[in-house]
Image (cartoon, rainbow, N blue to C red; front, side, top):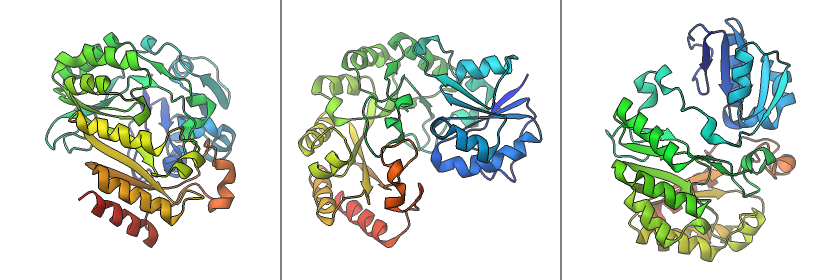
Length: 349
């Protein structure tokens, strides 16, 4: 039996898909419209299961609108396997979460072409031309920021893989593909301090470089030294807005002082810094944006990303979508957004 994972296929109406008995579509809210258009095309060739963040949060809606054969909520590795092997299924099934991440096999990268696994363009934070790919060492995020889908109860339980198993997977990828750089796609890489330091010491001798996403309030100087020694090239942190008032509105559970200290420690450790910023959150005023611009002028991160607030399904703000525009997707193309982005870009020059 052949199973194909079609998590991010562009232009579904014109794409050509290999024959399979089952097709899996994993999607977040931003790509749900494309995923929905993909379903009837794939159902001509086989059965379709949808999963991922968006179907987990809105399973009834996805089942009714997209009409796949099956919607699986939660972490579907074992349940989907059993269904493919012949277990019966209903239109919507709950997989829950997997407590023991070490029980999972390594991702079947060998089923994809090398070009689908390895990137040399620099999108993973590496120098252009350096072979790179992604890996995950943990799942879940214990914080409940109002802006984030991961505040949904399905995604808040933090679990991590053993340092020894992570190292084995990295070694396997390196030997198969010649990868020299990794982007760890954990929601929050440094949640558990002892675990993080153990992992850093385990992978120190691999000679790789890597980047990760985390929070300023989970960092300290000793940990950052260990990260630097193990090859950490860049740390990405969610600032959103440098305003205690807005941070409180977002339930970020941090402060201006903690953010500035954390960013400073990253830079002191000789690690690159990227900040994630947000605009148009309800209650955010011009003075809050001015404080954020001033913060960037002082800290001078190497990079930043600016997002426009979107009330995503599963987030605490989802129920207030009508108050902030009535939808969950806003294009980042209006004049106010561009003007603010230009000011931020000027601030770090």
